[in-house]
Image (cartoon, rainbow, N blue to C red; front, side, top):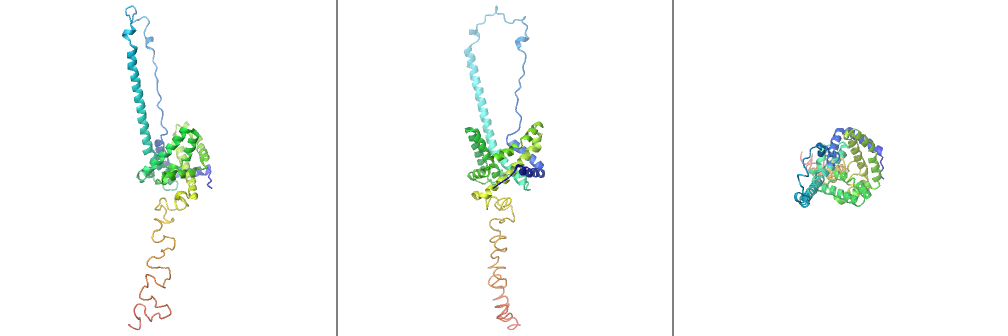
Length: 363
């Protein structure tokens, strides 16, 4: 059973922030931009002026009712005004709705194809930096990973499912948001994973952890209030890096559930069993002394496995069946036997060592 405490996660997060402070600040700034947070609202200004009628003296009457006989039917037509105003209002409303739909579509496309992959890359950066493998290129690794469309698809599906659950009921939407919370972290380590496996893995990891995760988020509420008092400065230079590092530590703990269950091949021999990965950071080995270096073995059955030099390296055995016995490299090394038919038997220097006879047949 996986157990964790907020104090442990935050302590490790502080250590991670101290090692990578300015890099984390920069990463969180990018995350804020692609996440659509921040930014000010455009306030509508209204300036009042005095009524024009009050600026004129009552002594000045530019229109004398006695001199001008106003006929509303002749000069002003309600039909002509409505024929002009109503189409104009409809045109403005149509243009506004169309413009809104265009902006909304562009925002969806930009968020799906640009922001979501960068978000996954930032989470990868935090995970790697916490283990001493800081590489800011991780922020955009999805675009060159060869699995860009797969990441985009799974992130879009996660957002769509959460939105649909919110449309049905608010509470189920919140629950699903926490259930799918680890999707970008899973993709940051395995961008090639299929959608079904990704959703089932995050469900396994967040099973029984939703309330604890919410409480963990709630523990940053005090920091958020202090950030408001500093106009967001504290959030930029401490709260955001601190909280993101904490969430990375949370994922590092919860992913152990996947190791224990061995789900979908990402457990005992896959995802991670001991350390960051049993077979390394990727399939071909971030780890030099892991289960193997490149695949099942490097040279022979394995590198440090069945025997050090393989079951045999050159011939049947190098240091295996016997050293000076049946053979070393092939059937024998020099002639019928290296030291004769046997070592102290038929003759050491009699039958033949390197020729037919060493000291008798030829001198």
